[in-house]
Image (cartoon, rainbow, N blue to C red; front, side):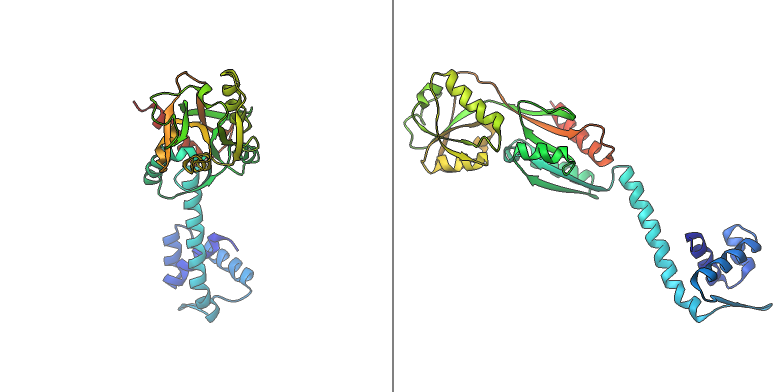
Length: 295
């Protein structure tokens, strides 16, 4: 059974006349008769009774009419969906992100993109940078917003944010009222940090910053998320060096103080696997690039 057979069948079922049906289909009567016979052979039942005076649907033919219409409509919908996916108008994207992106423009980007592509389904997953790199490598993510100092080979990149570290202090801390603070002033303070297992690059970066300032940090708390680091500080349990964007978290009990010396910035990249034939991904990357080129 072919879709052509069903289309011919439905036209004949409406016209109940081989000549008029053939005319609507822009074919001659013999091919129409042949296609109906092939359909009847495939179904295993007579669909029409015919004589010199009239063509009538059999009970089997009447039963097939709504099913044939439904099958053709499903085929048309499938074809439309395939075209829309090919054009980047439909489909789905799996997007990973680190928590700090919630304070670096990701919500606005998502709202704007969804307004322009309402039929694209975006699934967002908050994951550590290391987990995202694994998921990207195995193509379980289409794209990720990742903190890293080393972009692995095979991934394309857009630098979406570059920000300094700031000191995150309990509001009642002796240094909280200063305009700037030196790293050395944090010597001996219990410190919270993202764990090495979650982000080895940035765990090592913070240790290196303190070492360069002349002391070994007293890391007492190793956590999975930067927001957890800020939350712990807000409860007076320690201090931290965090990306500047976390000031926007506005957690009560915390004060963010700039450092008195420049540090290597905390970079966030949009990463995706090279050579992906994915029109929806291309559309999303273009949206990211448009945000990055805005004045």
